[in-house]
Image 1 (tube, rainbow, N blue to C red):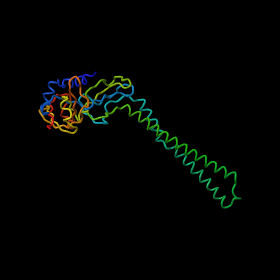
Image 2: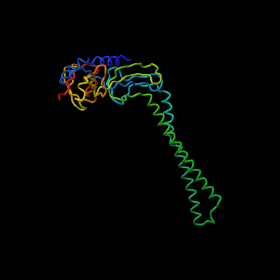
Image 3: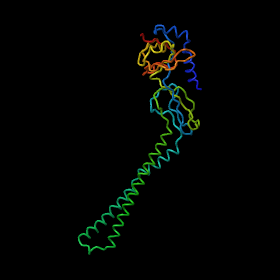
Image 4: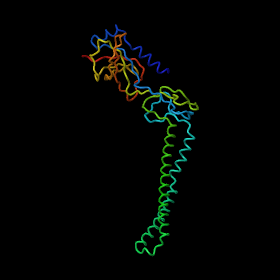
Amino acid sequence: MRLFQCTLILAALMTSLTPAQAKDTAKDGTKDISCIVLANATTEISTGVPGVIEAIHANLGDRVQAGDPLFDMTSEVEQLDYEIFRLEAENSKLVEAARAQFDLAQKAANRFLSLSEQNASAVNDVRMEQALSEAQLAEFNLLDALAKQERAQLEAKRARAILDQRRIRSPIAGVVVERVLDPGSYGAAHSPVLSIASLDPLIVEAHLPASAYGTLALGMEATVAVSVPEDRQINAPITMIDPVIDAGSGTFRLRLELSNPSYTLPAGMRCLLTLPKG
């Protein structure tokens, strides 16, 4: 297990209250209760496909937004495939030639049809049939050229999508908390490269005695006291009340949501929770 994850798990275990402590804090529901501030999610970013890591764009501690590039896999072959299909898709000369041939053949066929309507005896039936046949063939060639160009465009789109898969982007906003591989390293399929912790909002977790169950409700605000980076008291709404009471400790989990848009509050720190009265 990663060092960062182990630290958070150890800190979470330290917040559990003993039954005696829990009963004491629950007498009036306002005494300080030990809690911990956690990242609301930690996402492991993997290679997805096997290959060599060409470049990494995010280092430990860097703040990233959803969609930001994190690292690139080598992509020479994919780049060449895309360029080939792109050139084919953008080449309109075959379509233009087929359309010009169709226009000439169609005009010739229309002349024969017009003459036939004016004076059928003056028209050579064989030549007219030949002109009509050439017009039909030219139309087929034009449709075929258009279909081939459309296929090339789709192939270029697919090649672009495959090429884009070689650049891995962040699925969430957060902070890089772990880096496993370096540029030049080979990553098998789905090998972890980076881990990103989502820090806005943060999660506050505490354990309360069973006697407090039923006195709280979702949306109620409690006060969270933190000491890093400075002593502060912050109101946070309750977002989860565990419906299962732990039989061993006689406690249940409580979670609150702590707004952290500027990322000034770190995850993993201890805190004190004061519950709302009533």
